[in-house]
Structure formats: structure tokens, C-alpha cells
Length: 256
Ligand SMILES: Nc1ncnc2c1ncn2[C@@H]1O[C@H](COP(=O)(O)OP(=O)(O)OP(=O)(O)O)[C@@H](O)[C@H]1O
Ligand SMILES: Nc1ccn([C@@H]2O[C@H](COP(=O)(O)O)[C@@H](O)[C@H]2O)c(=O)n1
Image (cartoon, rainbow, N blue to C red):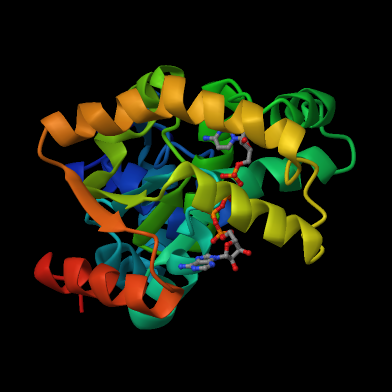
């Protein structure tokens, strides 16, 4: 008989952080859903046995994922440096801009048009969209170290992250690529000329992006700076030189 109601032990009950490695069928089960954390003994034993099969992976990812926010002006070289960090250290690179562009192009996306409008005008997409894209990408990657590039870009981004993600992750520091405006503009226009295909690598969009960066993003960097969480990197030298500094920061913070 399905009589005994068993409360799931803490170790299984708190699979929230291990969701990245859970097979699909677990993700809507009582094991996954903390709001329904009781089930019949039969169900519990069956789920418990299945959970045993994935235990090694779960153990590996039981710590909270580590997150480094990567910020800086448009064209400062965030993406370029993130690629180098991925090569040297074991991080997954998630660019908020790339995820938004991908969602914009996804057939059937209900946000496609909205995203394009925001991007072309250099405005910041509402955090509900961006944060969900980030969380999904984190879950799907199965990794435990993330470079979150181009986020949080304004107060709405930061508030949304704090609501949805801050308890589930461990923010390590903010990597801030400090770059003069004229250098940023030159780099973005250069990227546009060499065929980036981006609808915002043009002077008209760039003016708006820079305005958004100065008005909305710099205060966020300042906020993290006041909290002692910013690692500032001079982004003006060539990319290899910049990376020497970046590597030093990661090593000094215990990453191998
Ligand atoms: N240190 C550097 N020196 C010269 N050019 C660079 C440097 N770093 C990146 N670039 C070039 O500048 C352009 C912008 O770089 P990248 O895409 O990495 O910037 P970003 O900060 O990610 O930009 P965005 O925020 O607009 O996505 C690219 O064409 C890249 O090759
Ligand atoms: N948190 C973010 C990040 C980006 N966007 C939008 O995407 C544009 C391009 O971003 P890049 O980082 O690739 O330069 C950006 O100008 C925003 O329109 C966003 O809304 N929120």
C-alpha cells in the first residue's frame, strides 16, 4: 500500500544546486521540487535508487557554482578576454549579449522583436528575460565555474540577479575592463567593418550604448567597487598584454 509518507532526507531534498546534472525526468519530480518534498515510500525508494546512479556527478556539483561578472564598455575586449580565460582556466563563458542575440533569432521566440529593439537602441533588456536565459544556460552547461559577460548592466539586472540567482551561486569578483571611450568606439567599428554582422556595431547605436554604459552600467561597477569586489584591468594594451593581468588576477584568487 502507498501508506508511508516519507520526508526526503536533506541531502536529496536540496538537489537545487545539482539540477545541472539531473536527467530531465528528475526535474519535475518531488526530488527536485522543494515545494512538494513528500512522496510515497515506493516512489521515494525508486527515485532514491535512480538518484544513486547519478550520485558521483551530483557530489561533484553539490557546491554552489562560482560566478565571475565581466563588465566594461562596449568593445572593451570582454569577449576576447573571456575566450582566453576559458582556454587557460576551466570556466564556461556566458555572454548575456550573445544569449539575447540567440534568443532574438530563435524561431518562435516571443521576445525576438523586443530584444532587437533594445539592442539596436543600446538599451538594457528587462532582467526577467536575460536572467532566465543565463540560468538556463548555466543549468544546461553542467559546469561549475562561469564567466557572466555583460551582466549585470544596470540596477534592474542586479536586482533580478539578487532575486533569482544570488542564493544559488557564489559570486567571486567583478572583472572590470577599463577602456577609454574612443578606443572602445574604434574597436566596435573595426569589428563591424570586419563583418561582425551586429546591428549595433555602427556609430548611431554606439552613441546610445555608450550613453547607457555611462548612465546605467558605471554606477553598478561603482557599487561593486565600494563593496571591494572589483578587479580592475587596463584594457587598452594589446589583447595578450591584457591577458597577462587577467591571468594574474585569477591565479591570485585561487583558480588554477
Ligand atoms: N586588447 C585589444 N586590443 C585591440 N583590439 C582588441 C583588443 N581586445 C579586443 N579587441 C578587438 O576589439 C573588438 C571588440 O572586442 P570584444 O568583442 O572582445 O569586446 P566586448 O567588450 O566583448 O564588446 P561588446 O560589449 O560590444 O560585446 C574585436 O574586434 C576584438 O578583436
Ligand atoms: N545584460 C545585458 C547585456 C546585453 N544587453 C543587450 O545586448 C546588447 C549587446 O550586448 P554586448 O554585451 O554583446 O555588447 C546591449 O547593448 C544590450 O542592448 C542587455 O540588454 N542586457
